Image (cartoon, rainbow, N blue to C red; front, side, top):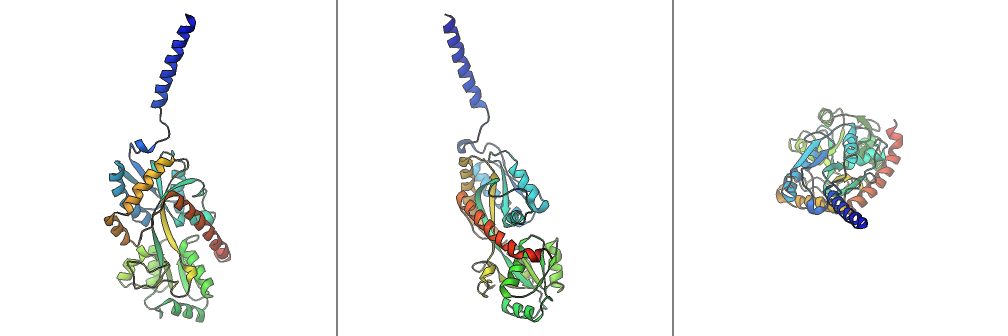
Length: 328
């Protein structure tokens, strides 16, 4: 009789434990995700390309996922504040990072505490852009060949705008090596300040993302002479590439991608990836991004992972070659 009572108690306890376990929060599955708003963390301020992409994606993803997409700007420390915040967030798919090549450069230059590949989970690409090269209107050059010729005649006299550890710094060094010229980087903290000095001919070379350059180009405030894409940019089909000018080494793109905390369940990652892919195919969003110079780039989480690993290797080599100049 006593054994029977114990058996019944054990059975009841087991059943209650099962109910309690089912009620406890565990790793989210795709079938019940999301059950609350999803936050996309932007590592830079409002109005930046990362911010614009996040807000455009959010409009479509809200309808697809059935939950609001909150865009949160956490600028500072060249993006590292946002990276650290997302990496330390709960790996449940509710906190994402809209990252780009600039954050990868933090990593390869030793200015980051985390590794985008090892410490975060790739979700999806979110577009791509390239850089444009501007010269002042009064500079007597109309293409890359004429710029190189002028730089060779005046070694050390032409200046380019950059910021330490950023894409423009390395583009300037890459052009110096490829063309065998000597231009000098002038460090800037603000793109706006660099633009003002370009128009005043205090600097002669300005590398800036196409999205930032289009208004300057359209207003004829300076002369755009090349872009770093493998092909010409759709919004600027008249501007040749460095590759066309004979400098294929300056074929550089800036990719944007969404990352989640390490350990986010794969079904959740896949559901998010599907929502991003759908958003990027929305004609209105595609058009809005194109006006910012952001062109289509989509792919699976595995493709993002492979891309990041390859780009980390490439930029590591670029940084190594630029190390002597970076230490000037």
